[in-house]
Image (cartoon, rainbow, N blue to C red; front, side, top):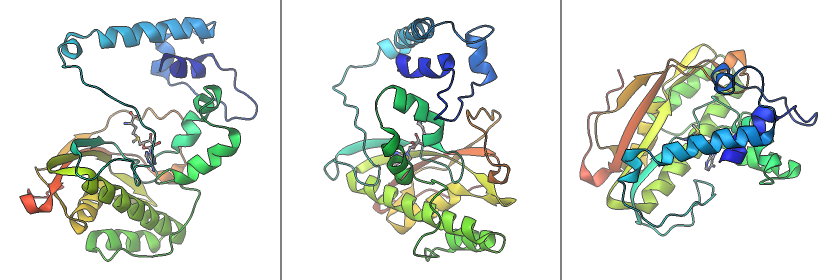
Length: 262
Ligand SMILES: C[S@@+](CC[C@H](N)C(=O)[O-])C[C@H]1O[C@@H](n2cnc3c(N)ncnc32)[C@H](O)[C@@H]1O
């Protein structure tokens, strides 16, 4: 983690990759200018990580065996009904090009080759470069009416939204498969705007969930987002993320909560 966080601040930008930008907040942590060397940055990050890990709250936690896996969320190598809790923050519709914003780190750490970047991008949910979906609706009221509203303004954006929702339905189905009968799936997701229209992502995800047998287990929690600290510049038509929701789903057989999104 420390190495990955140190690459961007010390980079002078390889001409083959998009020049990295550093947020003002990030710059302040290093004082004026960029750190002089990779090791200066690395030591700063290591110290920060060390002090986070020594926080009293973390030290009191019980130790359990853990494993980091890197898999497509739509196809997890996990047995059915194994998870007590799933917590995820999936991509928001059109919010961000994740591969673009971390490709410098991926390449520098040798986690990916230039050729593999494209493959990774295509696998990324919500990737804006692959237009369309063979289907144009989902047969769900809120999802389809949002797609149609966008279609009146921009056909390709409507196809992208449809594709995003189909991908998210696959993620939810995979979560449902691995969730224990008494388990919970917690999703943090933001709303966004596209073509001047609000995309009520949390509401659409809730509708997708209920179509596959997942229901809200508690009333959704909303948070207004103040920071716009994206690392890479976004297209002006992509809109801003205005709110962030925390949704907790359980298997539908357990009964649901009031899905209020106001
Ligand atoms: C809103 S961000 C959440 C970031 C995360 N909370 C973190 O702190 O690293 C969404 C993440 O979903 C990842 N993602 C996109 N498509 C995915 C897929 N098919 N399978 C698994 N993760 C994916 C993106 O790369 C991005 O890191």
